[in-house]
Length: 357
Length: 247
Image (cartoon, rainbow over all chains, first blue to last red; front, side, top):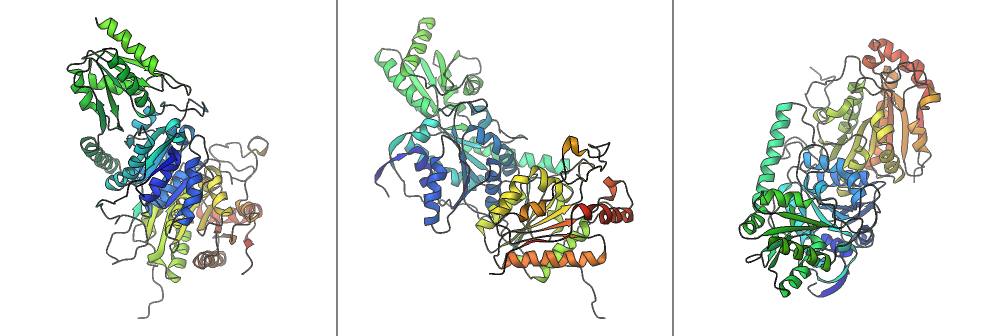
């Protein structure tokens, strides 16, 4: 390890997971993430204790994850938008039962069967819970293959730390694109022991009988459980929020974009600077918790914000909540698998600059 | 004084919530006794269903997981793959297993997943108040088949054991009943055998247990047992449906 390799995003994510100690993968074929299960099926049997199993459905796959996570393993599943919708039942149970696992969503166009092209239209689903009941997941959004590798490895640690699923949310481009990547040497941080796992028990064995469960039939107990979950989310909001800022200090116009879109927005920002327009970029790395702080800071001096997404406008709601009416927040989006171009973003900002004069 | 009977240590002291005359209590005891006699309490992981046995995790005195409706075989698969030396069982009703969980049970069976499934068939959805199940008999009145199950309209009951017995994966599939003492003893033997085969690593085992639901059938416990014997057994014949040749 340590040397640079040219890898496809999906394959790099799979290898990164194995390097981070993931030994169980349950998945189902769906484009554009098939290289993850394919890579796992090739690699897992060669890794000690490794198990790849192709599930009969997305629903079965996420419930296998529930069983494996409940038994204390590092476990992962991956899918793309329609498949992630099917997994939502299981994700809700996993959150309720406080089980750690990593879920990868290589987002494609929707609604319905949509398309197999890249999109970012699962933002609401990912950051608002997705399944039934109110809950949160950490959502990590890489914008390069290298970052996808790093975030995937961190996702396992964060899942174990909080006993909560972590979603790595890419788009079809991140999954399909080949880039040079350096596989980091994974060092496992100190994490709490999984004394809660169901591994076999008898009286006097030194721990309580394990019951992996999300059912709390007594309303007061369920309310208490939900408060406990939300106390955990409050810690995540305080400690796990990540973002990248570029040239925001003096920016008149701040672009907010994540994932692949952020890379296009960065090129647009540079082009605008060349043209004498002071543009900046805020790139959320965690979509939940959402980085309110840098946006609020930028709202003090910026003239306006532009949110760019491969959707009809979802993250823009969070940007507006953060800006809280202080400055105009505009939106530019392409959907259906169409990727916004540098020129389109530059034009948007140029129009905003004209209006601001 | 000599001890002539003791409660199995595989059941907790928690009082069962089941209705008077329901046979879930008997089946819980048979499963617990079988595991106890095999000496595997410290290795056993049970997976509870959604349905009347949803609280089974409070009763079986071993590590337990509670699965989503119909998903117990998938949960058990994940659990067993992580720790293959564990004895892993699911305990599922007919709505859970034969309807919403039809895919999970079929694929666990065909994979030859080395788990044991206790399938409690009482021909009705009990927990939700007596709706029609995939196993409801033709003509049987339920709250969603108030004029009796019309096979022209909603088809026929599924014989799950026979269906799964057509697959190559399962090591052992048997249907038993708990309507009288003789059959209870036979049921116990089948359940113990299924667990024994799992311990030997033989693959997927399932015991379907015909069970009564006096509350939702609208009968006394005695009437219900008689109805089971006279109506369910002809539809769901007892016996071993699949047994892999000893290798």
